Image (cartoon, rainbow, N blue to C red; front, top):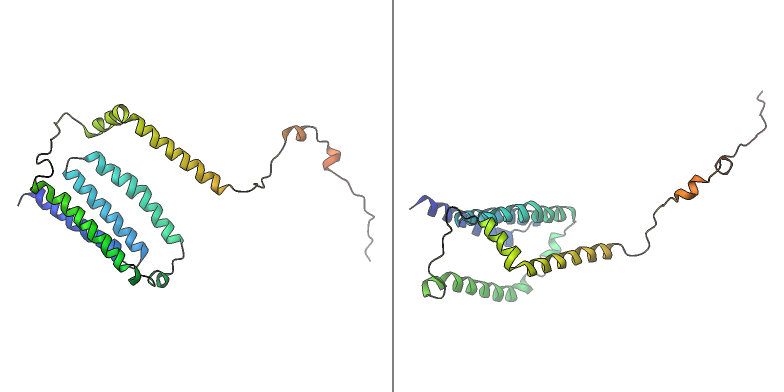
Length: 200
């Protein structure tokens, strides 16, 4: 067995184990940590396929930002685990149907190469070519309009999230500089004269 094949099976085994632990773990924090492990294993598989940009993006975006945010949210929330387990068996038939559909789709995709449904050869990139350069050229030439549309949609989502959180009038303390300039000392300072008290 070649070393590359061994590394592929090693990462794949860890990925399958981490994916199973994500859905079978009872503690949400543990499930989030196993999902981080699954992302790392998937990035290792991407590196074996010479897709280094996707591997680094998977680690930086999902592990570095999204999963850390999920983990903080899960740890800050007061989650009642007993309440989460109440309706588990009622969702089992629907979950089983969805799981069988996903297994059938994965079997079609993985077995399609052997049945002649997919292309048998994957074009290999030359040593001078760069995946980042190729993706950047495609994004900003051929797919520039969908890329800009996606950025506009994300901007609208950010504005909508800010607008939803800023409901009602904000009670802020503002200062008018023109009124401060014309303030006199007599308006702000008042001298009180009190009779002196004599103590025995």
